[in-house]
Image (cartoon, rainbow, N blue to C red):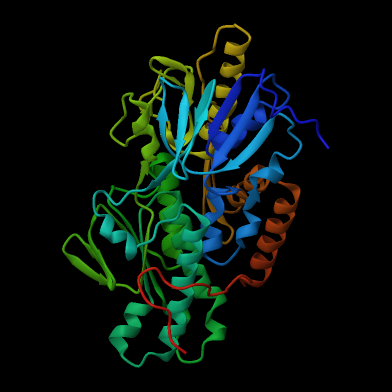
Length: 430
């Protein structure tokens, strides 16, 4: 067993709020350092969010893309893990306040509480259009998608049948594109042989993006290829049109009504409300505007990283909320924190862009790796390799690879379990 330094009172206490990419990477970067690390998260697991859509589409199980934080840090003697939800920070007193009650004092604070769904002021839409940020979200989307086919199998009204087999994904970023492509492939390849009264392959999947095109970060060439790939498998791509209404039976896009049994929200996020308690400037998305070294104005002992941070120094705009950004910021915050402990100068954060990827469907993806632009099969293989390597834990990598191999060879998804009750309706009797 590792020797525990977490309880040694003579060492500076570093409190890390959030066990996502940024917070966990900061904690791991402090391994062996002369500090006490306390990582706090309201959930006990680290989640690999880029693959959440594969849990929602019944390709992977929750355990494949999540790992208990205590297990990840089990060999790090200077770290401890606490389960709790931070609701406020008092920079003057150097304490964190928790929803469960009580405060936690710190010498250094790393805030990495991320972001949540944004319905652009229409929070009532959330009941009818779940987003995709947590395992609970993914399981709810999976439940609604699979249950729609079960209900369609028993439906005799043609209009209601069309509604049940229509799926609208709002938002043309990577999450929306990947989810729309996977859901259509399930309807087209996985489910048709299992239903007797309906034609599952005729299910309609509509991807709605308010901007001029999907995946704007990839450039026009790759964006056009992604759109063609989606349309080739039967996804309807609607761009330049905003959703103006969402209810239990569909959406309104501009002035057009689309009746849909399942609506999924992938259109926007807003920063964690914890940033407001720091008393420093925020950008329009509610993110904390950080200094070049990732600290906040007037409080060099507080670092804000990941999706909660607005970093634009030397750039045309703030860095996007990507896992690669969060991981690099976690490491950089740890280095600057240790520099302060040692009485040395800090260094400005510099993001190294190693590329962006998005999968479109079976054997199809796009990738932008510096000057290199990839699409199709080669990009898909690159996407598989990169995501496998980023997963935490050897077991997770093996399990995910085996599920991907099975799904590719058979077109089947083995995790098609309908669990729990819907958020907006009572469970069926029976």
